Image (cartoon, rainbow, N blue to C red; front, side, top):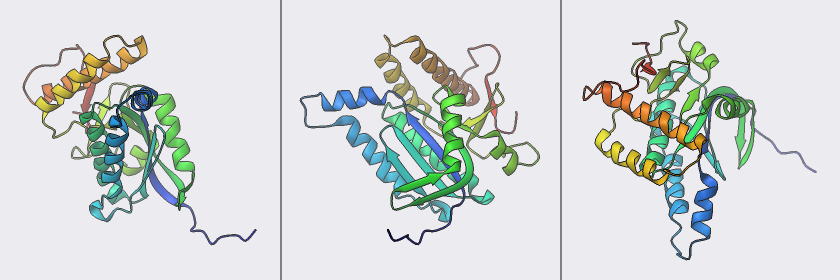
Length: 235
């Protein structure tokens, strides 16, 4: 067998996203008598849109398999904010289609070529998604936050929020039309009225996050006692 000439693995920002409720989407599409595959079309359109992004000269790679999405760009501190913005837009686009996800963002050696993926950064991002995220949030590695922001204060212009568990997650509702977001949220809640305790806990978190965004807009005060979130600079 002839060995191929491969590029060397390099340090990347890597995001791993998991689509919640994916098995039900597959079942809904492929057990339906309709030829219009609703979720297949929605997810494929979002995937194509994000794959074709060329923001801030980022060398963005997007890979989707089953319910998992991997986004990566070569590591550069100056591109961190843009990478977070792309992920926020991806999560927001899913939300607009009434689809929720959770995930993790890390950094590390990463190799992707011609559909072949071999990545230490992905392993770390996956661990954050599976062990830490818990809610419909995309959590950033604490090590990555400390590496990018030596003083521990995240730039308030970056799409990140700090939760009361000390973790930063992607603020995908920043600068969105909250009236439209409210309609999407109501639709998600209505569709999941009879869901399990685990799903209801995820939806409770989502409503608290939405209430926080509304309160920050000045429209109302927070409903749930002690603030759960704060802007990324800690205020």
